[in-house]
Image 1 (spheres, helix red, strand yellow):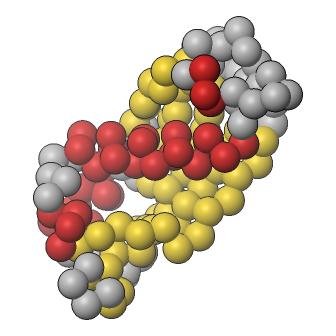
Image 2 (cartoon, rainbow, N blue to C red):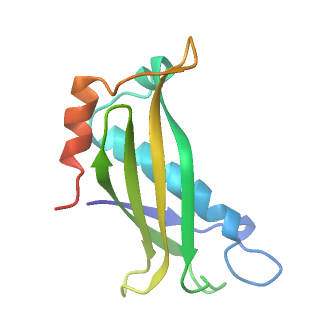
Amino acid sequence: MFKQRIALRWGDYDALQHVNNVRYFEFMQDSRVGFIESLGIERGRLVEIGHVVAHAEIDYRKSIGMDAREVLVNLWIERVGGASYTVGYEFTDEAGTVYAEAKTVMVTMEMSTQTVVRIPDDVRAHLQQGIRG
């Protein structure tokens, strides 16, 4: 499982004095990029074969209040298919409080033609390293 620490900024909070729901999607994106980099996949390669969000869902369990300074995003790969893979996320604090659980289905796409393509074999091997066992 990959872990990403996200420092919370003043702008992450809303008028209800908790982290705004939209920010979680940004945290997911930041964590995916961190995960891809941890596997040795260069950002430049993503310009050729992109990893595009096809579906996203999130279940909010508990608000992250104004006193929080960071959130931990635990990320893992749930499934690797032909041209897509599913990423799981859990948002917690150091004590293990679960704030939200989420999932994205990612599709690999040839960016120059905007067509869906099979996950390249080397990328598939990297993704399979992240499968939660």
